[in-house]
Length: 440
Ligand SMILES: [Zn+2]
Image (cartoon, rainbow, N blue to C red):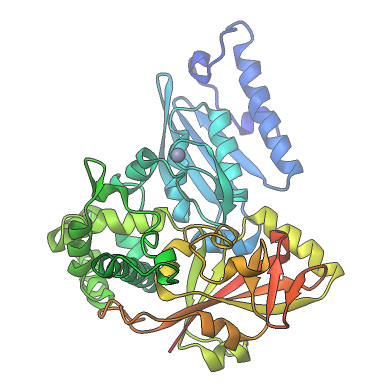
């Protein structure tokens, strides 16, 4: 491929790229693009850059990336990712991203970077979407599988307030079961917290007292008033969302109305009319979620899940790096199924922290008993025993009244087994979560 394939002759200013040596400007830029292409070819991620004047068209070929990840990011593996970068003075603006899936949201972090860093960060995101905060770019302490903001209130605020970051008109109809689940779990955690406040103080040594205050962790920062958690307002907003079925029906009407050009704004306005804070809270629930949860209507290939679960989500919770490590181990050692149950009020938090973080803390009721690690049971009925309901549930939810456990695969080598009913796994590379099971 010659340099002409990347650039058409144009009189752009090379200072725009951040270089100060004007004498060899043209060659330098061609060299950079050549270098990028060569690097990514070596990593099996072919890219193509087409440059003319103030516009750079970048095309990524996704064929060689992990197909499970590309699909979980809502991208079509068979289509290339196309990005148009508009260069305006010293700044760059990304416009017209085709086939971006939920990458529409993290790519924004590169807004003021140069062309090379834009390309680099997009490739990093494609390879490891959960590793960096999409707003400030800080590396997340534990990488999940999904773009997730760091714990800074400002980052969460930006990710949840900016309407352009998650296209609700597209996302809600295709993922309404997920939003239903996330909404219902927050509803339960908030109610549980409020009910326990009424019942306080607990008797010394009560198991309930260990988890009464921390179930709404993280708390949506948009409901802080002067640093105080506004439980009443949050409670009101949670009650204001209709059944997701009804929401999807109304969004479909907006989306099919040819007279409405800006569907996303129209959907935002519809949701705001229900309650002004609803769009924020949906985006916050998505922006803080660490795992991909993909609703599946049937689990016939899995006899244990199909005979135990009313509803199932396939789940990817690990970063691509951890998935690769698990894959390596599975070539050498036996893999067994295992299950993890927890009371219903804990799941809002579990889905936003890693399972490891969840073990051996006051959040986990039974965890600390057998030492540090991830607690999983070989038998689904053991996990069911821990997955208690609490009688509180969002009555508009499709998942109303169901309890939750998750299914994982475990590398059965050099792990601790306690009393035949529990694995305690210290090395998190030996665990791969595969599904979330909702049952009666
Ligand atoms: Zn951040």
